[in-house]
Image 1 (cartoon, helix red, strand yellow):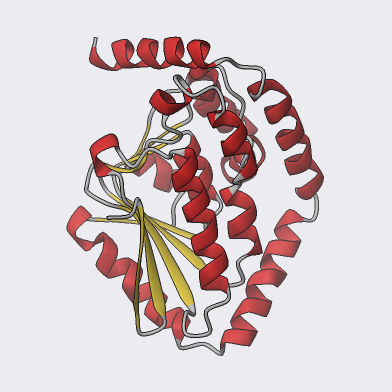
Image 2 (cartoon, rainbow, N blue to C red):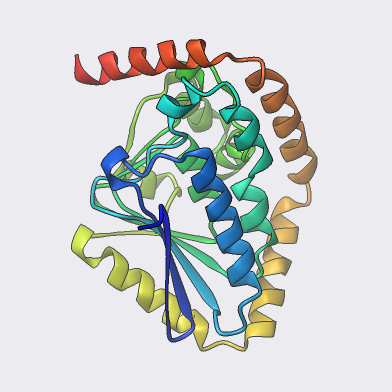
Length: 253
């Protein structure tokens, strides 16, 4: 089965990150399929709303697959060429993030590019970019501070520590928390409400909100992306593998 699965019903498309055996970690090939999925659904006249989630209860996504990045010297270049934030920004359909379990680093970035975020009570966020020696290139350094304020953003990103579910709700990272077994049901309820709205008006309203939010954001995002890839493409696969092993030791100690 594909590592990105699309299910369609009644104007709602569910996009599942589908590598549960590795916490839905993102390989370069998976990123391309994810970007292609948003492009495909944007052009699908039957789809009015998109729900993005991860397969299984353990994780929405643990971020980039550092095992692949640590052994394939071309992997970072392929990641740079497939930008999910750009694909999501270009999508005119509302994207609801249904966050289950771990939402880490690159997975955190993808979540922040959704239009609406709901999460299970088991959700845990973390930004471990500094721990693995990379910089964020999909908007995390700019979007997070605009959502939770610069002080909390620095605490989250410079420590790499986990943010638990209730804190995420209190800080405005998510709209609401639901029990894990209610997560997809609630996401579908919200999507069904949105799907009843005139699709052209819905897309126009989404664009209006986004343009207002991004009025002073676009130059900052461009700055982040330029800095990220100037740094990230200079990081070697062995360095990433060493960082990955250090993270694994820290997680199990």
